[in-house]
Image (cartoon, rainbow, N blue to C red; front, side, top):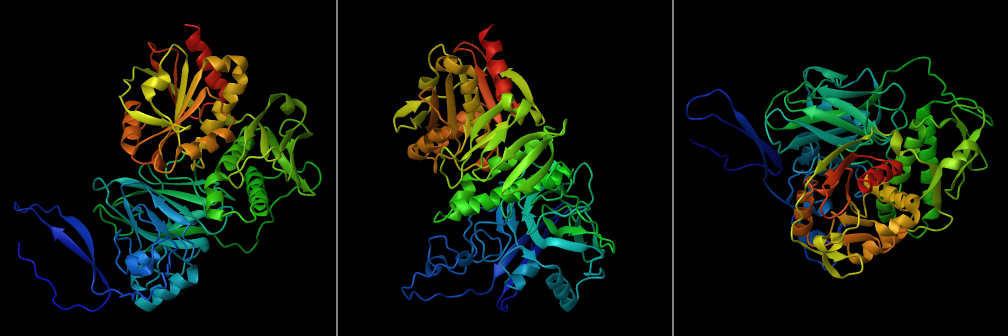
Length: 557
């Protein structure tokens, strides 16, 4: 096949689309996008060690190349993972767009051409750019008002043509009421995202700039008022793929928007007593209030580290509290939020600035204590008391399996060499899960559930072996696991294990729990009566009461 190349090109970044047809003359073609850099910046080694992206490597060492091919020069790109892309200029830690591990997320051609190295742009910026470039026949001026930014990105590396893939977008403002997700194409202009069995829009509360990973259980279908995280499922070549071709690549300029109205509505709020407000506003107020608490509590602490250890757990629990139907309204006075019982005109609980949840009345008899992490530190005052609400989730499935344990070496949280066989030997019942210490979504819930199971079992917990295995062994050293274990009140019957990456993966695979990366892990709990019994596999968020019931059934056989 003859191939001609332009021998002399101007400085810049180019995208070549190569169409390949097989020798039989079949009409099916495969497109592959390749970026070619005609020139690059040359940095002088002036000894200044300037580090524009704050990743610990100097601009001179990183240079102007783009090793991960996301459209951002290495010296401005602190993220090496292909599935992560900056969503806001100047913010390397927050507002990150994330797709599924194994895929490649990159800037649009327009963003690269303009040397604008993040996926976001505001509405007027988008209109001006499209008008100046000629754009297409579609009108870049939308009939809707965009809120929280417009985002342009491309996804490559799909496993097959026509695949549907997820991407998470942290919007820059809370999702408003009656919001829709809008897409732009040159031929049509702006239109609503089309939802069908291969395409969907969902949202999660998250917090400003930080969102759960794609596929997380906290995403709920639709755009929910007050939430900060949008998850799209987009089909390659489908109606939401801007290039309109099933070619293994997805393009998507779009954003959250609302229909303008001349008669804006005033949100219903409560004051003093028990006036009703929408459920979304309760979650939003709680989330904003807790974020303010965190800001006040984090003086002198690195914000990035706090966010990794922080709000996801509280957010999920508070959202669960609302969805449980326990409370329906809220009032605020002197920094204290009072939650009102959904079934009676009485205060069900108060939430105070010390981050303590104080149940009253009927709820008081059922409240449970869980550790909450602010600034990575658990203090006596900094605890969250709440009525158990995990059972109000989508539930769980239960199956039984005969797993074969591989011979793999591990390291205990006290730094001693061990193995899974050693940890599980004997006739004691076993409860096992997979976690990692910087997880902000399901891991804290799983760990808190284990903590409550121990409390519910009382003295009988001494007869049960609990094992939590880190799926991020490169970060989770024995020292970090020790600190994590202390936060959840673990004793010597609850073992936290780490080890080499290959050994951890082998154990995950033995339990059919390996999902490629830690970002894709699922809520799984495993129980076994003794060494000769099959494993009970629990998929989903099971409450502590559920786990205890499963345990009692196992040991009574």
